[in-house]
Length: 259
Length: 90
Image (cartoon, rainbow over all chains, first blue to last red; front, side, top):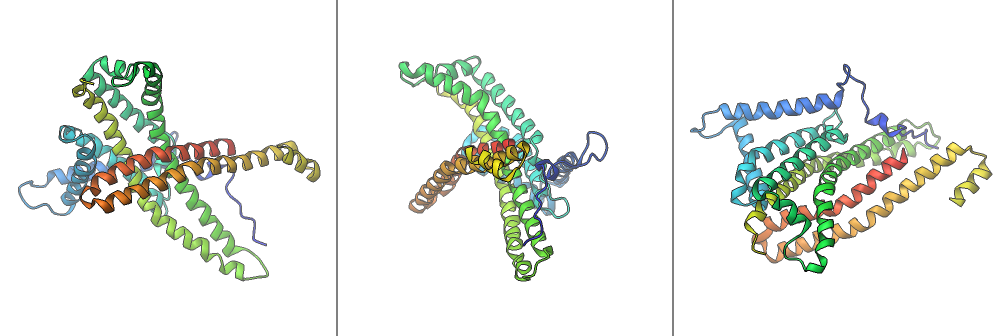
C-alpha cells in the first residue's frame, strides 16, 4: 500500500537539534534572535521624535503598547496596573517572537516548544507575583491564602489548603505547560501532516490515486499553518493576560481587607 | 492488558515490542480521555460568551477577555493530558 510512513522515533528527533557549538543549538539561537529583534524594534521606535506623527517602526511599537494597555492591563488590573505595561509588553513580544518561527519556512521550530523557555518565564512571573503580594500586603498575603477571608469558618482549612496549592504550586506549572504543550502540539501536527503528504506523494503503488490523494494532507498542512499563526499570537496573549491577572491579584487584595 | 498479552502470544512479538504497543495505545487512550471534558467545557464556555456578546455588544471586549481566561484554565486539563501522553508514549 503506502510507502512506510515513518514518524520520527523517538519524538525527540523532531525537537532535538544538533548543537551549533557546545550548549548552543537552534532553539537557543531562535530565542536570542527573538530577544534581539524585540529590543531592536523598540530601541528604533524610541529614537524617533515623539512630537511628530509616528511612522514605520514607531507605529508598530505603538500598536504593541496600546494593545497591551487596552487589552491586557486595563481589562485585568485597571488603571493602577499601568506601571506594569513595560514588563507585560516585553513578556508578550518575547513569547510571540519565540512562537512565530514555528510557521516561518526553513526555521519551522517554535522556541517555546521546549520546556526551558516557558518554564523560565513562568518562574519569573511567579517570583514577580509573590513579590508583589508581599510588597502590597506583607505576610498578610500568605495568611490570606491560608486562612481566606469571606469563607465560612468550617470550610476555611479546606479552602486554605486548596488555595495554597493552586496559587503557589499549580500556577507556575500550568502556566508553563499551557504555553509549552500548545506550541509542541502545533509543531507535532505540522510534522505529522508534512510527513504524511510526503509519504503519499512518494509512495510506490499500483494505484496512482493514492499519490494524488496526497494533496489532502497537504491542504490540511496549509490550513494548520494558518491556524498556527493564530495560535502563536493567542498563546502569547494568554500567557501575558494570566501574568497580569496573577500580578494584579497580589496588588488588589490590599484594598479588599474589609471582607 | 490481556488483549496485548494475547497478541504477543499469537504473533510471537518479544516483550519490548509488547511494551511499546501497550504504551502507544494507552497514550492514545490517555489523550482521548483527557480531551473529553475540556472539549465540552470550552464549547459551553465559548457558546455562552457568544450569547453574552450578542445580547450586549458594548460589553464584548470584557466578555472576550474573560472568555480567553476561562479557555486558558479549561484547556490546561487537556494539555496536561497531552503532556502525559508524550511522557508515557516515549
